[in-house]
Image (cartoon, each protein chain N blue to C red):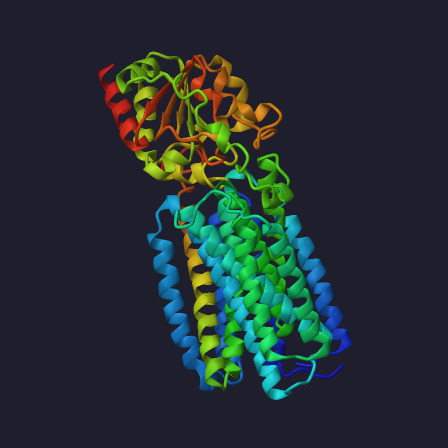
Length: 101
Length: 469
């Protein structure tokens, strides 16, 4: 896990550029989509489940196994619950455009 | 430049694809037409990166069961929670999912720290790594306990009013100082495992300490902010694990979540600082009792129904009370009946009506109220003066004229001009004050008639009334 200075700087570039992208994509959102958007963004950070899987793969002590198991559970709740609940919110918008759903 | 194995190259490409789907997911979610596709796209990207990690990570051959068992439990819990939650309890559910993500990020940081200490006992980690580990641990922990408090306040398990005790700010400041001290010690003096764990425990306390003084009305903003926090925690752990998918996704959410939080504050005309530290509703409670209590004039459902049935224009102002009572179905019925009689019926949606922006839109859409009848505040505010009946269903602070005057906790918040309507009918559960805990002169306005009771029952009574009118 020893990163070179070059890799460190690359990570910094990615971080800064991603922050600008995140800023740009949501800076113009109608109010009624605030809740679904928050919920969708919430699901996206569920990608932490990948981090939980990576530490689970190297877990060798009982404590590491227990903690990474909990991390996988929490991360999966975040992903599955997040995307499902967002979809449920958006399902209700389908009548949009004059139709009566 | 050293060469990467083919597998490593593919892993980077999978991260890239996943990152692009996340960006498009957020972009699509910002427009009603594409929102659902966006969400599905994000889910697809997520599935790809999860599956890839599962099948290609070294060590997974031995420990696959942790992921399988944890994934199965988490998937069932998340799915059931998301499917079963009532639309009214949606904000709490998002808080719980967010807290889960924050907890996972903190745990990943903890496990990484413990593993490093096992491999190189007593050895200091390179500074960028230990900083990222500490950040992941502290922000993830704050997000976890903060989200639990937010859930409790919205669910009614914890008092929704701002909870403060003398010297509360000093405790917060002290916590910050101790956390910084511990962090610096672990980073540059001695990587002590007990002190690191103490750091995590204090971070959990900090999450509670920061959210308890904030009133229930501001919880949506808090949830949005904690959502951004979790994003940052995920980005930090992504850095620790040198995983670009985590780094990019976490940063995206951290940035977009911050903007979203600001947009929400702007809709209430308050600064984020004001939301976090002003303790909304702590000042006005004493004044709330007594004022205007006896001057409230009541009306029965039949009279209210006649007033609307023979009006030309009715504006319905839904609020949290409609959501709690699940009154959106009867409200739609009422609208249909009035429209059939030739009444012009519109809905006035305040940006923060309910407990989340867009909350009312979701509920009314669920009840099949056509979108062209939902008007945003700026579009409809000038129309109230020309309206026969404004029907306020369980809304309070967003129609409180006190907001126009200086000196009240909600001063400056834009409100719906309900008080300009010719007749005002307010459906309200009881005589208590609203979320902000301040009196509402609209209720004692001479044009206002109160109809007390559960919103679903009173709206159903109005429906009967209109049928007979």
